[in-house]
Length: 132
Ligand code: THU
Image 1 (cartoon, rainbow, N blue to C red):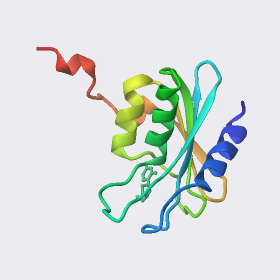
Image 2 (cartoon, rainbow, N blue to C red):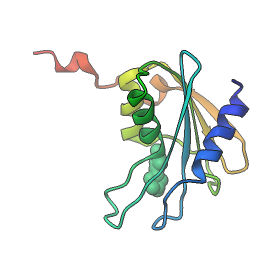
Image 3 (tube, rainbow, N blue to C red):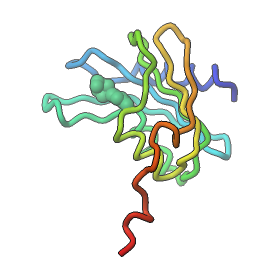
Protein backbone atom coordinates (compact mmCIF):
# COMPACT_ATOMS: atom_id res chain seq x y z
CA UNK A 1 0.00 0.00 0.00
CA UNK A 2 1.28 3.46 -0.85
CA UNK A 3 1.54 6.30 1.66
CA UNK A 4 -1.28 8.05 -0.19
CA UNK A 5 -3.57 5.01 0.08
CA UNK A 6 -2.91 4.71 3.80
CA UNK A 7 -3.64 8.43 4.21
CA UNK A 8 -6.91 7.99 2.31
CA UNK A 9 -7.90 5.21 4.72
CA UNK A 10 -7.18 7.55 7.65
CA UNK A 11 -9.22 10.33 6.03
CA UNK A 12 -12.09 7.91 5.53
CA UNK A 13 -11.90 6.82 9.19
CA UNK A 14 -11.99 10.45 10.35
CA UNK A 15 -15.50 10.74 8.90
CA UNK A 16 -16.74 8.54 11.75
CA UNK A 17 -15.00 10.55 14.47
CA UNK A 18 -17.22 11.73 17.31
CA UNK A 19 -15.89 15.16 18.19
CA UNK A 20 -18.82 17.37 19.29
CA UNK A 21 -16.71 19.21 21.91
CA UNK A 22 -13.43 20.01 20.17
CA UNK A 23 -14.77 19.94 16.62
CA UNK A 24 -11.43 18.36 15.79
CA UNK A 25 -12.09 15.01 14.12
CA UNK A 26 -9.12 12.63 13.82
CA UNK A 27 -8.68 9.43 11.82
CA UNK A 28 -5.83 6.93 11.82
CA UNK A 29 -4.89 4.01 9.59
CA UNK A 30 -2.46 1.49 10.99
CA UNK A 31 -0.59 -0.86 8.66
CA UNK A 32 0.66 -4.10 10.18
CA UNK A 33 3.87 -5.77 9.02
CA UNK A 34 1.79 -8.42 7.26
CA UNK A 35 0.10 -5.67 5.21
CA UNK A 36 -3.28 -5.67 6.92
CA UNK A 37 -4.72 -2.25 7.79
CA UNK A 38 -6.84 -1.28 10.79
CA UNK A 39 -8.45 2.11 11.22
CA UNK A 40 -9.69 4.16 14.15
CA UNK A 41 -11.30 7.51 14.88
CA UNK A 42 -11.34 9.88 17.82
CA UNK A 43 -14.22 9.56 20.30
CA UNK A 44 -15.05 12.30 22.83
CA UNK A 45 -17.41 12.43 25.80
CA UNK A 46 -19.00 15.16 27.93
CA UNK A 47 -16.23 14.43 30.44
CA UNK A 48 -13.53 16.14 28.41
CA UNK A 49 -10.71 14.14 29.96
CA UNK A 50 -12.42 10.92 28.92
CA UNK A 51 -11.69 10.81 25.21
CA UNK A 52 -10.16 8.22 22.94
CA UNK A 53 -7.55 9.11 20.34
CA UNK A 54 -7.86 7.78 16.82
CA UNK A 55 -4.45 6.07 16.99
CA UNK A 56 -5.32 4.18 20.17
CA UNK A 57 -8.64 3.11 18.67
CA UNK A 58 -6.71 1.71 15.68
CA UNK A 59 -4.21 -0.09 17.93
CA UNK A 60 -7.07 -1.66 19.90
CA UNK A 61 -8.65 -2.87 16.66
CA UNK A 62 -5.37 -4.38 15.48
CA UNK A 63 -4.50 -6.07 18.76
CA UNK A 64 -8.07 -7.35 19.02
CA UNK A 65 -7.58 -8.78 15.54
CA UNK A 66 -4.48 -10.66 16.66
CA UNK A 67 -1.85 -8.26 15.24
CA UNK A 68 1.02 -6.88 17.30
CA UNK A 69 3.58 -5.80 14.75
CA UNK A 70 3.13 -2.51 12.93
CA UNK A 71 4.90 -0.90 9.96
CA UNK A 72 3.26 2.51 9.52
CA UNK A 73 0.48 4.71 10.79
CA UNK A 74 -1.16 7.66 9.04
CA UNK A 75 -2.90 10.27 11.21
CA UNK A 76 -5.09 13.05 9.86
CA UNK A 77 -7.57 15.68 10.91
CA UNK A 78 -9.32 17.00 7.79
CA UNK A 79 -9.70 20.43 9.39
CA UNK A 80 -6.13 20.48 10.69
CA UNK A 81 -3.89 23.33 9.57
CA UNK A 82 -0.88 21.64 11.17
CA UNK A 83 0.49 18.13 10.74
CA UNK A 84 -1.45 15.69 12.97
CA UNK A 85 1.27 14.49 15.30
CA UNK A 86 0.47 11.64 17.69
CA UNK A 87 0.07 12.77 21.32
CA UNK A 88 2.36 11.42 24.04
CA UNK A 89 -0.01 8.64 25.08
CA UNK A 90 -0.37 7.49 21.49
CA UNK A 91 3.41 7.45 21.01
CA UNK A 92 3.70 5.25 24.08
CA UNK A 93 0.91 2.93 22.92
CA UNK A 94 2.44 2.50 19.46
CA UNK A 95 5.94 2.09 20.91
CA UNK A 96 4.78 -0.82 23.06
CA UNK A 97 4.41 -2.87 19.90
CA UNK A 98 6.69 -1.33 17.26
CA UNK A 99 9.15 1.30 18.49
CA UNK A 100 10.74 1.77 15.07
CA UNK A 101 7.58 2.03 12.97
CA UNK A 102 6.93 4.96 10.64
CA UNK A 103 4.55 7.78 11.51
CA UNK A 104 2.88 9.80 8.74
CA UNK A 105 1.52 13.04 10.19
CA UNK A 106 -0.91 14.53 7.70
CA UNK A 107 -2.37 18.02 7.31
CA UNK A 108 -5.92 18.74 6.20
CA UNK A 109 -4.64 19.75 2.77
CA UNK A 110 -3.06 16.29 2.36
CA UNK A 111 0.59 17.29 2.82
CA UNK A 112 2.43 15.10 5.26
CA UNK A 113 5.69 14.55 7.11
CA UNK A 114 7.20 11.21 8.06
CA UNK A 115 9.10 10.26 11.21
CA UNK A 116 10.46 7.11 12.80
CA UNK A 117 8.53 6.61 16.05
CA UNK A 118 11.76 6.36 18.04
CA UNK A 119 12.61 9.91 16.93
CA UNK A 120 9.31 11.09 18.40
CA UNK A 121 9.65 9.06 21.60
CA UNK A 122 13.35 9.07 22.27
CA UNK A 123 14.64 6.90 25.16
CA UNK A 124 11.19 5.45 25.66
CA UNK A 125 10.01 3.87 28.87
CA UNK A 126 9.50 0.21 28.07
CA UNK A 127 9.38 -3.26 29.60
CA UNK A 128 13.11 -3.13 30.40
CA UNK A 129 12.44 -0.25 32.78
CA UNK A 130 10.23 -2.53 34.85
CA UNK A 131 13.10 -4.81 35.77
CA UNK A 132 13.70 -5.02 39.53
N1 THU B 1 -6.64 13.36 19.29
C1 THU B 1 -6.37 12.20 18.61
O1 THU B 1 -7.28 11.52 18.13
N2 THU B 1 -5.07 11.81 18.51
C2 THU B 1 -4.00 12.49 19.04
O2 THU B 1 -2.86 12.01 18.94
C3 THU B 1 -4.21 13.76 19.70
C4 THU B 1 -5.62 14.20 19.88
C5 THU B 1 -8.04 13.79 19.43
C6 THU B 1 -8.55 13.70 20.85
C7 THU B 1 -9.61 14.79 20.89
O3 THU B 1 -10.84 14.22 20.48
C8 THU B 1 -9.16 15.79 19.83
O4 THU B 1 -8.15 15.14 19.06
C9 THU B 1 -8.60 17.09 20.38
O5 THU B 1 -7.54 16.87 21.26
